Amino acid sequence: MLAVLGAAWALLAAAFLAALLLLLLLLRRRAPAVRPGGGGVSGLFQDLIRYGKTKRGCGQRPAWLSLLQVPKRWFTHFYVVSVLWNGFLLIWLFQAEFLRGSLPSWIQHMHRALGRDSQSEDAGNEHFSALLVLLLLWLHSCRRLVECLWTSVFSNGVIHIVQYCFGLGYYIAVGSTVLCQVPTNVRNGKVVSLSHSVPFGDWFERVSCPHYFAELLIYVSMAITLGFHNVTWWCVVMYVLFNQALAAVLSHEFYQKNFSSYPKHRKAFIPFVF
Ligand SMILES: NC(=O)c1ccc[n+]([C@@H]2O[C@H](COP(=O)([O-])OP(=O)(O)OC[C@H]3O[C@@H](n4cnc5c(N)ncnc54)[C@H](OP(=O)(O)O)[C@@H]3O)[C@@H](O)[C@H]2O)c1
Image (cartoon, rainbow, N blue to C red; front, side, top):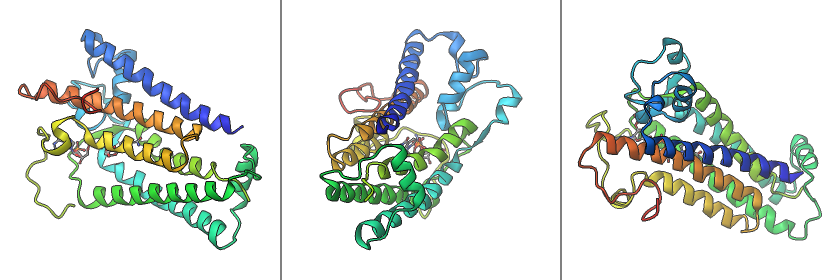
């Protein structure tokens, strides 16, 4: 049954891969019917995949669509939820690992439902790996929360309510997935401008979105920490790969469209590759 969890992540990865391929196809054709802000199914598709700066220039959109969007600065809520939820999971797992406490009954039910084998030969190592990954995830969320509160300067960008709800659920799902791998036994700088300019320096010289690439590397490093063989976590990595690739392609397209002198050699997401 643990395969169900892996299948759910694989499905999510496949959905984002499909969205990425569709977007690349549409961008290649430059089909007028799929311009952001267009009506019908293609308009809805664009509305669901774009957010923040890549949603700009979406033209005249029906008023009811605006009711379904929330400020992008609400990204902060994702990390509040993540710090709290994954913090709780971390404390529970720490108690179970080092203080001989037991995991809450609902986690044990979840494990049973997922058919996790409590007699795993390598249970000690698996416990420790999961604890380490959960700690990394929690630290990552803390860093992102601090960034959102004191470093990021959000303009008036928006995200669709579906993306917002997805983001809230995402960090709950990702922490819970780590736990299911366990056997049971600066806004202090000066704001120069709120507009989006061409980023440069360091990894930005190679790709448009090095922060998305770094996000992917974080999840790959967690996969290595959990052991290369953990198929469920590789499905999570696949999801992050396609999700961030989609956002990177949109961002890359935004820069190319808005800045005629945008460096031609810059890739979107993975240096020298894509
Ligand atoms: N694991 C996942 O599923 C997942 C999903 C989404 C995001 N993330 C992570 O969350 C983090 C933030 O993602 P994001 O999509 O919000 O990144 P983003 O669109 O690049 O925005 C990050 C910050 O930089 C600003 N910004 C973006 N482009 C700019 C430019 N050209 N000039 C000046 N300022 C600019 C944004 O302002 P505006 O908001 O005003 O544009 C925002 O304050 C990333 O590290 C990403 O990897 C993870």
